[in-house]
Image (cartoon, rainbow, N blue to C red; front, side):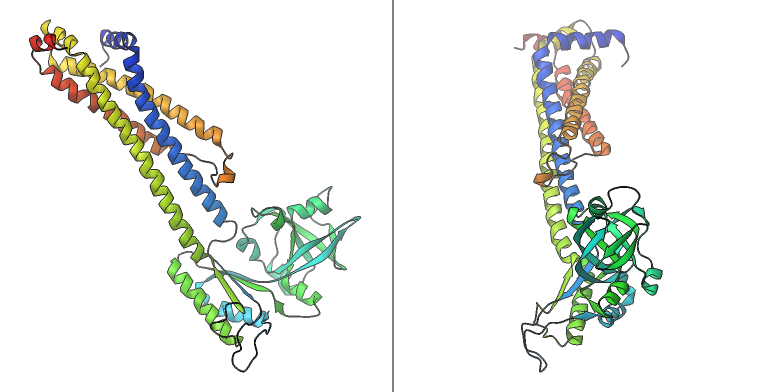
Amino acid sequence: MFDLDRWQEIFASIRSNVLRTVLSGFTVALGLFIFIVLFGIGKGLQNAFTDEFTRDAQNLISISTGKTTIAYSGLQENRTVVLNNEDYDALVDSEPAKVQTSTPRYSTTMLVKYGKESGTYQISGANENEVVIENRKLLNGRFLSPRDMENKQSVAVIGRMVQRDLIKDGDPVGKELNINGTMFKVIGVFSDDGGDWEERSISIPITTLQQMKKGSDTVSSVYITYREDMQPKEAIAYSDRLEKELKARKKVSPDDENAVRVRNRAESLEDSFMFLFVITVIVGFIGLGTLLAGIIGISNIMVYIVKERTQEIGVRKAIGAKPRSIVSLIMQESMVITVVSGLVGVGLGVLTLYLIGNHLEEYFIKNPSVGWGLIMVAFVCLVIAGMIAGFVPAYKASRIKPIEALRAE
């Protein structure tokens, strides 16, 4: 294996047959290149889907209300259904073992001032769990706490864009904002993957906001995250029960879809990830097909190479070369070409994915990449295939009698 003369002979054979070497190497490199790029794009699709559906908590149930469209229980249609604190407590306490986190929310828009700057922003009254449900990241300070709720504190957590619009200089934590005539101390700044719209909002304790609304206990919506170990079907059944119970509580017809609206992310996630799974399987099938085509290509080329060298094999046998020596020589040459070409294919594939980067986000492909483990498996498969592809025809050729090999054309 480490015979210097043998290696010199291999490289001399490669140099003297450049076209043959390039053809066999091109098949290997192209197979690995296409395999890596396809699997990388498949991973990019998966990244985009995951990012899209994890902006908020994945295990989220959102509950809101509207106007009735069906007369029911002696009440007329077109009646506005309003949620309150008691409804929130009833929903959360319905099956507490299934609840991971929850928050009521009262949403409104108000004029916010800081010094000479002002603007109208969405004010979200919620509890301390909002940061988890909205999947927000704290950039500075802290988020709301249970104590803020209990004491109805005038504190606010502002989005990154609110800070950029109003508090242009210095640390915003500790500064005071005038929200609809009431002074609120800024206790934190957050960012949100939902974009600028989500970051142009301000969160304050819902108890404080309800107090500003003349002691109203109104709730705009209710957000509940269920336990992450629940299966999608179990989670959907849970949200269906919540909807049924709330409709009964508010005397809404079971067939009225507008009066009580319950959205469970499990429903969309189940469909979306099934679609993603199908895409991944298709991409994987094409990638494996490409790899298989590369293996077949190597086999065909090696058969041609060995056939072309039949007379050379005859000469070697005539001067005393053993069949094992002939086979090992061809296999060694095949392995060198396969390994070098494979490294070229891997390098080009990884470089292509790096250059693509996030330039295809508009096509729902984000950060395409392939794990080195998968690359190594594909690489080793091609190297082994190259060795087998060289061994089979070489072994057959080594069994030919020297006189027959010399007469071959």
